[in-house]
Image (cartoon, rainbow over all chains, first blue to last red; front, side, top):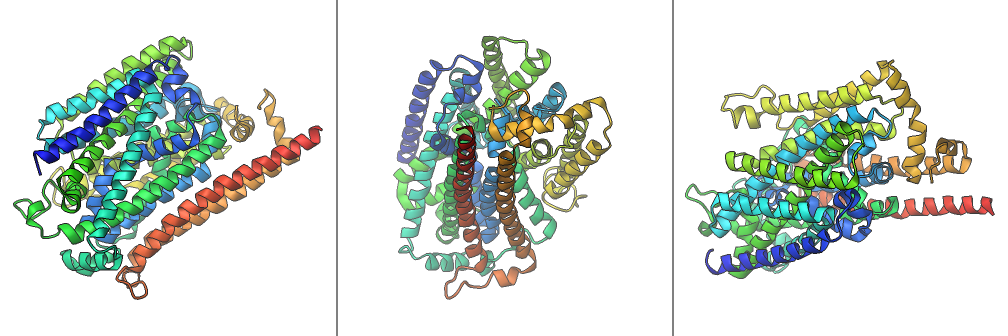
Length: 516
Length: 101
C-alpha cells in the first residue's frame, strides 16, 4: 500500500486543498463584519447548512473511530450509532429554533439573553474552550498519525500542514469559507462511504445475511458480536453513553454556532432536519462497513501487525477495507477523503474557539460591547492565529495523546457544563445567574474528577491497578449533578439579580418563538 | 416582531395556543425518542441473550434490526417535526392576519 496509492491519496487531498483555498479566497472578499466572520452574515441556505452541520459532526472519530469500534466490539457499537442520530433529532425538537431566535453568534448569546451577561459569558467561554481546545488537539494528533501512516510524511510536517490550512481558512474566510469547505467535505465523505459500502457488499454478492454470518465466524468472539454486551454490560456505563449523546451533542459549541448561519428559525429547523437525514444515513452505512471489515479483514496477514492486531490500530480499519475491496486507487481516494474530513472539522472547531475568546470574552466581557465591528474582526483574526499556534504546539508536544480518551472527555464536558445552562436558560423561568454558574462549575469538577478516576485514565494512562470510579463514562453522574446544583442554587437564590433573571423570562419566551 | 413590551403577546390567546401546540409537539416527540433509546440501551444489558437472537430466519440479530429501526424513526420524526412546526406557524400567522383584516 504505497507508491501508486500514495499518489492517488495525495491527488485527492491536493484537489480538496485547491478547491478549499479557492473558496477561502472567494469568501475573504465577502468577509468584513463580525457577523460575516462568525456566521457568514446569516445567509447560508437550509440545505447547505444541513450538509455543513453533518460535516461538522462526521469527523474522523465518527468514520474511522466508529468503524474500528464495530470491528472490535461488534454490535455493541450500535449504542453509538443510534445515540448519535437520536441526539441530533432531539436537538432539533428541543433547541434548534429557540436557540436561533435568541442568539447572534454563539450559544453564550442565548444564555446571556436574560442572565448577567458578563458572568455567564465567562462560564460559556470556559465551556467552549474546554471542549474546543482538547477536541482540536485530538483531531490534529489523529491527523498527524494518519498522514504519517498513509503518506509517509513526518508527524511534524503533517501537523504543520493541517494547522496552517485550518488557520488560513478561518483567518481569511471566516464562517463562509469554513461552511463551504465543510459542505464539500460532507459530499466527499457521503459519496466515499457509500462507495465503500457498495464495494464491500459486492464481495458478498449483496447478501447481507451472508456477510453477517461470515463476520460472526471470523471474529474471535464468534456470534456474540451480534448481541449487545460485548463492550458494555453494566447499566451505569450504558446510561452514561446514552446521556452523553442526548445532552452532549446539544452542548458542542461548533455545532451550536452553525444555528446562527441561517436567516431564521424556519431555516434552522430545516437545516438540522437535513443534518439528521445525512448523519443517520452515514451512521447506518458505517455500521455495515464495520461488520464487512470483520468478515474481510480478520485473520488477513496483509493488514495485520506483528502482534496479530490490525496494522496501524483499529482506526485504520476503514482505510484497510478500502484497499481490500477497491485496490490501490480506491484506497487512495478513501485516504484522501479521511484527511479532508479532519481538515474541515478542525477549521469549524477553531472558529468556535475563536468566537469564545474574541466575541464572548474580549468584545462582551472585557470591552462590554464597546468595540467597533472592524476591531472585533481584527481581534478575532489575531485570536484565531494564537489559538491555532497553541493547538499546534500542544499537538507536537503530546503526540502520544490517547485520542479516544479525549473525544469521550469532550462530549462529557459539553453535556455536563454547557447543556444544563442552555437547556434551563431556554425552558425554566426559575434559572438564575448564580444557579447557572454553580451548576456549570459543578458539572466541570465532577466530569474531570470521575474521568481521572475512571479505568481509562486511572488505570490505562496513570498505570494504577484498579480504578476508583469503576465505570468507563462519567456523564450519568456529572449531568445529574450539574442539573441538581443549578436547580437547587436557583431556587434558594434571593439576590436582586435573581429577580431580574426571573422577570426577563416572559420577554425571552416571546422572542424565542417569534425571533428578533 | 418583538417590541419593547413584546411580553404582552403572552396575553394573546392565539399566541398562547401556538405555545401550547408547539410544546405538545416538541415534548411528545422528544419524550418518545428518548424513552425508546433509553429502553433500547438498558435492554441491551438486561436482555442481551434475547436481543442477540436471530431476526426471523436471517443471521442478523434483533438488536441490530431494532437499532436500524430507531435510526429510521429518528429521521422520520425529524421530518414530521419540521413539517408540523411549519404548519403550526402558518396557521398562527393566518389567524393573526384574519384578525388584522
